Length: 208
Image (cartoon, rainbow, N blue to C red; front, side):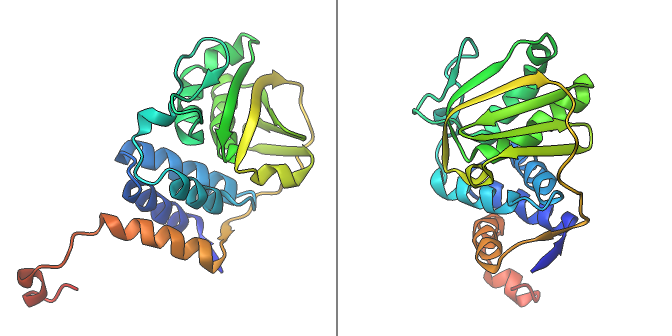
């Protein structure tokens, strides 16, 4: 099914909140999913998978244990939303030419929009690599090289971000998101957790 990017972002934000994210981090997750969808990449599906894998788990468990050296999650895996948001806070390292390395990143595709934000802020090209795929982002442009099947890995053993040289964009932008019914329903189920339960009083007033 085809959905507007606005309604896609709104559903993703509620879904992330329903799965235990703070509203602020839910907004980060939704923006990332929308950005990917605008390039016809499965951002909403990746987000739904992330919410399922770590449903209602404390965010600190999948946060970087330390920002020195290779980033690793406290529980052994890194949440791509948390790692991505942290990366934007550390974007000056990338601007100085220093690579950022991460170990065992869940749904690594979700890192890409955060790299794009850093690229925009720095006015640089940033390359994100894991397994056999290489993604280059710049303000408003996206290039993918290598094995596209690795874009949807459940977990990247090693992921690396570094400033790179310009590449020709390979992914056209689009104004709507193509989302399969299973993914939409999974996100809706998470989003419904944010709705207040009906009460006798609300029912008398016509709600629910």
